[in-house]
Length: 552
RNA sequence: GCCCCCGUAGCUCAGCAGGAUAGAGCAACGGAUUCCUAAUCCGUAGGUCAGGCGUUCGAAUCGCCUCGGGGGCACCA
Image (cartoon, rainbow, N blue to C red; front, side):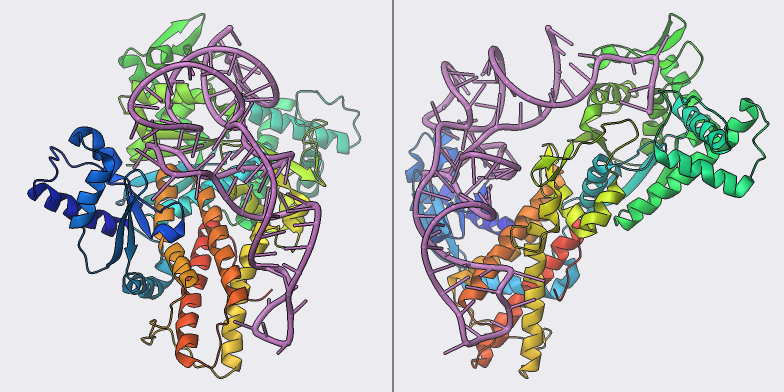
């Protein structure tokens, strides 16, 4: 919508230039926004101010000159206001035409090609398979999944991936923890080490080993047992993670195993290649990456004295692998506690000769669970925490997702469990879902009253005359721009704010105007508007992975 | 000590590629239901945009400094 306005302004600038009123050695970026007050007009531009300097003229004079040359059949009013704004009002037909178009797009409304098919990968969650997902992972899952949906809608060729850290020391700890619990359950007196996984879920896994394998591991050495327990525990936990995510409506395009990078020698090859480039050296019996040469604080170890490779080492191979698969932009979501990882990953990409701009780490800040205004303690004892599954089963998928997505992900989130469960308008998920249900209910009422509604027919929209109706129409029509902007800024919370604003306009409208009335033409036109609203709410919720109930 | 994020109404937060008189929800107070879902709506009140300096026609928004909160600074992940 705004691009149309920009074009009109652009044409006016050209005419003003031809008329000798403006110099315009180069055309400025045209900024179109909504005026502060909706009464001022539909769109505004600050072109007068931005040109004031280069034209050496008063902003108001420039604005007046541009305004004089604004010409388009769609314009209904042009006004210069304030320090040099041009306020523009468009004809009703301009909006109605676009509203029809939106409705005809149906579930595709909101899509655009602004991403131009750029191949993008979003890697998120990637929690180690050593325990169930907790709320923090849940926020990452919701944000990553929502961002993927938004970027697809905005025309990016998007893939999602979960990176499984299935090698290394913590897998040994996991195997050993399970093995110890197994023996404990079999009646042995075990002193369970502090640094092992102490959660109860380990006991459940050990019990499962007993159920499946009985006593076969009882009189065997640790070396004989650990490989089985490691694999068994990992598979079991990973299965649980996949189940939790799938119930949370998060489905990955790909699950990538770290182990596979060792099996196909990718890690080895990556290290050799970096060595060949002179980015690697040995010191104190370890192998280091010279990351400090690329804006990292210090160099990082990639192979320990013990000969083991660090996670950072396989991350190098992993990101090289992503690039080799043709991704032009790599987005990683990480918990904010990992932010120290950002410079070293950027250093790796630079060392490999890529522009670090192709790589973007989004830090997702912490979640505090609140119950009746009090913080729920997150990990008082080791192994005790609020799992994602617990929260979802308490407040439901829709509310959980909404709460994770309603705030900018770089700010700390207060998640009020009581509020999330409430069925009142202070609960935003509820408020939006209710609007959708209310619209559906109006359609049901229309049917009961014998109103024949056919959206494919050419409904006459001329009866729509209220300012409120046009405010709603404009809000609907800005949806594709909201999606685009969210995708560009990588900010998922814009969708929830948008929906809240849209829907509150509807609730107000509903209370002041009747949709179904004796005026048949008006009824049809208003139903058409409601249909557009319903489509927009659904599409917006679809981006958030939230359901749009027809009845509540 | 160094690095990252945050600080906007009593509370939770928008706004931040600079733009007009800084917004919403909740809480508080006052109203609205013969009518498509009152699960809703309307109104009132509420501000040193943490503070200071700078950049500019213009700063909540950009830069520097200070203060306050959170999180990092591993041959852990």
